[in-house]
Image 1 (tube, rainbow, N blue to C red):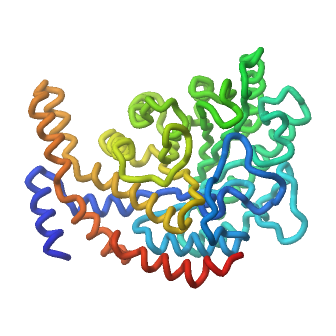
Image 2: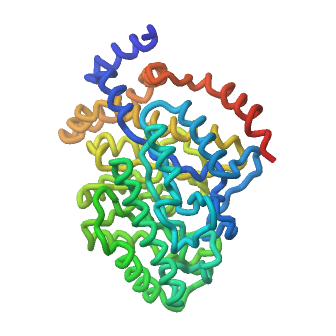
Image 3: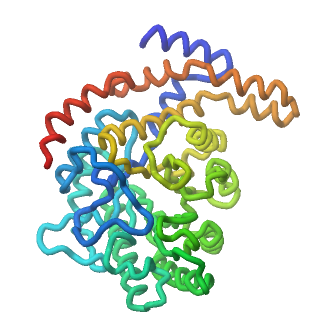
Length: 414
């Protein structure tokens, strides 16, 4: 225990914050880390290019090319990340020992190695059907397609993935967030906005027809995508009304999927009045849903603040979603995850009860002063103590490890 931490501990104690409690609580908060940062959302099927407004830009060397490389890179990343972690998988990361299965015929056996990987590394798993990057995405439509053959193909894919999510949950004895995001929409002004949404509702009802223990169903909206600028079938309003009509499907918030002036952080306390779970994807949009690596910015800190001060650590299921091919991909995982944890730690070190009382008693001047004062408190000392206790390098110490891994492993990939 460093003297730096002891000073911080005493400083926080004066405002009623126990740093030991904060460290203990932070260690228990699981962060679901997305596998697709490691290979630029390529997957293992080799069936099509990225589509649906998804784009990974850059050509930094060392992209994972197969399951073994992706797993090795992920293990290197989590060795540098403190706390409790999960891995978030897409269906396109199925592992085939022989013939490649079509997406509507995927089976639990295609994810057996991922379950073994999770058990080996003490990870939970979250799971997503993959409704993009495939020839069966017809005219940028999947579950909302007017072509019944296309629509039913993707419904079968969703049902197959539902069974896989249940298999994972049973194998790990843990919950699995099963999240549906579709790219469906039109580049230009549609003639019919209602029809596609009615078809989407029908498809979702079919996919979510069976309630499964430990499988948490969610749907994820998006305001627009590249080539889908004028109309998105799965809009925020559609999914909010859909999930409000069902007790077993939840509305996932991705903070990059709204208009630039909207703040996902403000949506958390709003949804908590009606929902007992909020799946969450944290990213860093730059003017649009560009999925940059998460930094310790104001919106990330505000998201963490709402989770903590709403006493919703057991209700908000935190995941990450970004993919940057212009930098070292292992470093991207490490930096983004650690920044999410830092934001949570700042929130845990904030005296919300005291601040709430100032608001409730209309002491707004003192509230402003206290809110500003806490910004310069030495949370960095507590973060460094947290890293030390979890046997991971401090922020200025993990880059040499990543550089060695890059030189020894990543640069050898052609």
